[in-house]
Image: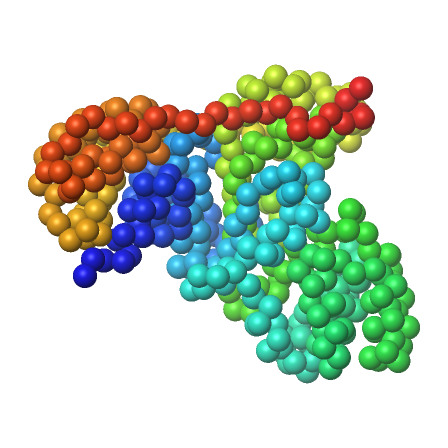
Length: 396
C-alpha cells in the first residue's frame, strides 16, 4: 500500500499550489531568514515582544512556501495562527475586512481546520478568564463596545442572541443599537458607550481584544501571515496610502497588538512598479502633507524589505533528495537516479523554484512509468500586474 502522506506531498508539489504539509517537510531552505523568524517568534513566546516583518521575492521563488513553513513553526510553539491572502474582497485599506478574513482563517495549535469559537463556548460568566477579559475590554480599548458585547455573550441563554454576538466577534459587526437592546434585556441596565463604535475607525479594538484573549487562554502568541501583499498596488493612490497606514498596526512594534508576530509576503518588483512607478512618496506629500506617519515608515520598510535569495546548489540538492524520497514512498518504488542527472533534469524548468520542482517530479514520473526519461516540458507561467482594477474618482 502506497504512503498516503507522501502521495499528498507529491501531488501538492506537482500542482504548484503551496501547501502547509509541504512546508512542514521542506523547511531547511533559507536558514538565515528562518533563524531571524525563529528568534522573533521566541521573543513573542518568552518575552511577549510583538513585531512584524516583510519579505519579498520573485514569482514562484517560495514566498508562500516560506509562510507555510512559519505557520508550522508557530503551531509547534503553541501559537495561534491566522493565514490570509489579500484580494479584491480583502483589501488592506479596509481593516474590518482584514479582521473578518483573519478570524475566518484562524487555526489553534494542532488543528487542521480553522475556528476557535468552540473554545469561547466553554467560558462561563464567572470564570477567571471572564474576570480578566471584561475589565480589559472596559479599560484598555478605544471604545467599550466589546465590554458590553462580551459580557452579553457570556450571559445570554437566547440562542439567536448568542449567534448575533458570536458573529460580531467574528467580524460581522452588529449595529450599536442592537447591542444596547440585547444588553438591556439581559441585565436590565442601559448601555452608555464612551464612544459609538465605528468599524472604519475602531477595528483595532478587535485585534487588541483577540490577542489578549489568546494569551489569557494559554497560547504563546498570535501569528498573522498575509500573502499576496503586492495586490495593494492595484488600489487607488489614496487607498494605497491608507493600506500602508493599516500595515503599521502589524509591523511597528509599539502599534502591534500584544504577543503577536505578523509577516507580509510580496512581489520583488513591488517597489519599482508601485512605490516608484506610481510615485507613492509624492502622493503621500500631496495627500497627507502634515500627518505622514505611519504610512511613510511602512513605505520605507517595503523599500528595505529583504528579498528571498535564490536557493544555493546545496539547498536545491537537499530539496530534490526529499522529493525523490517522497516520490518513492508515494508510488512504492526506488528511484535509481544519480544526484547530478536529477539536478540536470530540473534545468529545463527555468530559474523558478516552483518549476524546477515540477520538472523534477515529471522526470521521476517518466522514470517510474517508462523506465527512462526524456525532456521535461514544464513552462514558467505567471507575471505580476499592478494595474488598478477600477479607476477611482480621486484619481481624476
